[in-house]
Each structure stands twice: as structure tokens, then as C-alpha cells.
Length: 255
Image 1: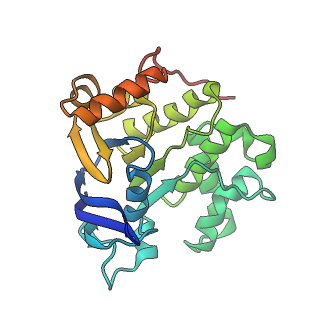
Image 2: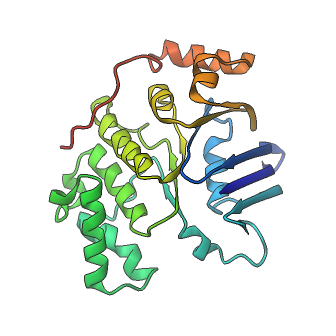
């Protein structure tokens, strides 16, 4: 379980997270929604220990992420994180990109790391692209490569930060379907997204953040289809005008 208790995060006089309380249970997919600047991405980085906090606590399986005695690099092996940017090494092939962390961080042999990398490339539908350089992959393939790279450290939790926001619309479906596959396999995930269709179809629970606070929390039906808070209603109306609330279910087409 990930437990977030009264977490505060500030940058000088600016309060980004203002007393966040949230628990993520094993096997859950929890989506964080809200306007830009509401604290969603910052919260993910605090969970992973990439950002410090000024108050409260975050626990992962009973270990305090920001505790003075915590071995943060060891803890991060439980917490895979995927960002908007692909961050692939351009001079390495897809399989070399995925094998790098197991070799450097987990001290695997080259043979074992390459076998593990191939397994995860197969998992996300990129097995046949293993030898290609990132420059020869589409945006959707690069994002799935980033997912495979995070999975190669065999985390117990996956954190996704707006992983489809930079993609052309026709490439979004393949990435979201990969995330649905991970959910079906029992992976615990925290997903920052503006794709309300994905939230409605896939989330176990949804947290709407507003000005650094959890303004509304509940099932997708409760938060998306029957919101109680005025700020949630306003946000969803804005998203609806952006044509993100409606549309057919997304299907996977690996390219």
C-alpha cells in the first residue's frame, strides 16, 4: 500500500500540495485528474522521492519515503515511473535501453539483462522492434519503450505522469491499452491523466485535485459522472468542451 498522510509541498511562498491524504491499495488503478498546476505531477514525484516534502508523510509498504534512514534508491526499485518525455538514449537500441538499468543498477549480467529486456519489450508489443534505435520508433512506440524500461526493474507500483499528452491522437490508444494490460495483471498504478475516457473505463478510484488539495475522491462513476463538488463540475465541463469526455472505447493496434 501507498499511504499519503497530510502531505505538504512548497516552493518558497508557493504551496503546491496542501495537506494531501490518499491511500492506494495493492492492485488498484487510481487516476489523478485536475487542471494544470493542481499538484498532480508533483504528488507523483513526491511518492517516488524525486521531490522533497515540507510536511506529512508518504509510506510505501510501511517504509517512509522521506524518512532520514530510508535507502531511497532501493525503495525506488518498487516504484516505476514514466514521464511525458520518453528520455530514451538515442545511441542505444530499444533492447539496450531497457537492459541498461538492470545491468547498471541491479548488476545483472549482460545476457540476463538482455533476456529480461526482450521479455518486457514482448510484453508491451515491441518485441520485433528490439534492435531499432529510438529515432526509428513512433511516439507511441517510444512511450511503450519507456514503460518497458520501467518494468525491467520489476517494480511493485507504476506511476504514470501524463504519458499520452505529447502523442498524436492515433497513437494514444496503444499506450493506454498497455496500461490496461498491466492493470489486468494486477499492477498497482497511479496515473496522472487528462484522458477522461480512460479514467471512466479503467480507474478503480479517481482523485480530483484542486489547488493542491484532494477536492473529490471516489469511483469513476461518482467523480466523473456524478460529481458533487462545484470545482469538479467546472473542471469536467471544461474537459467536455475539449472533447475528451466522449468517444468510443480505445482499441490497441501495435505498429
